[in-house]
Image (cartoon, rainbow, N blue to C red; front, top):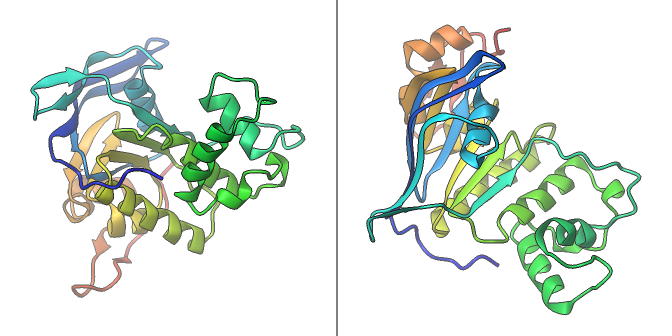
Length: 263
């Protein structure tokens, strides 16, 4: 299990004037963002707005201009954080003769999967337990549902107790019960552990209900702030063709207008 401690408030990731150009086409332009530990942040926007590119830049997978800093203000230094990452999809054949233990071991430990060490198994079970998935450790990958596989990937991402957790549409195709469980779990993780989480999501209702900070992106930052501030912005109305009514205090947000993503 992750060690439980309240976010200290001293860690944050800061993105300054980040731009990305690929194949002579500018994908991102002058993106600025700061996310403190203990914050569950969401990136929203139309398809092709650069959301996944931003995560890849944070991971160091693609070249960019500008800077990405992880700062500990308690000690006044800039360092590279431990980052957990959950992709939208993972290329594993359903016919692969591999169980969950083998999958996690091959990705997380430098040891042949056929050396089944007790200490490694205990670590894997502990991580899986964070997402109520420890009973999956001996299941064949090909037998897992989409929701079960995503819980395994999430467990892998938090094994090293990351300071920053990046999630690229991690719950695509999961039913409402699975969505509720996921978002509640993510809120608990950032609230009780010293980490920040950034999720790419098209689930505007869930972002409105659970996110602490929202970034509306379309090559550059169009709006940034609380869900309410972003959802009431002109940029949000123009992108999604409607506004958002939060209803009475304490009630579930009610979407109005056209909420489908514009092509």
